[in-house]
Length: 90
Image (cartoon, rainbow, N blue to C red; front, top):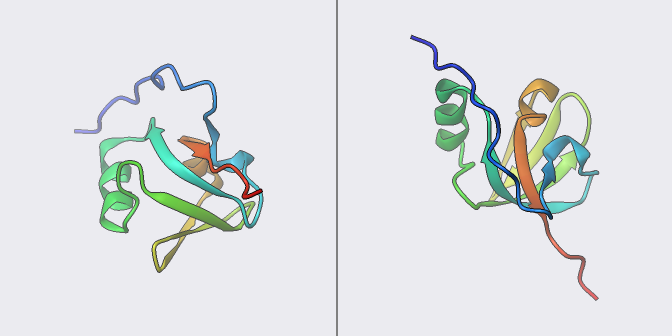
């Protein structure tokens, strides 16, 4: 049985969709509105709650680095992932 996608919870004011980040930008994973199977796959690849990620390539596919692993995400998946961008170092 496939879970029915639920609307995203009210995001924090500083959160954006992963697809809005450019190459080289970093962020902390906040939440997703993906189906359970997609969430489980991402979790198995290392995208756990509040993990830090860096965008290696924006677009389709969106390639992100989580710890020492690079993960290719379709634009469809990346549009459903909310992140909080890291503040640039002064």
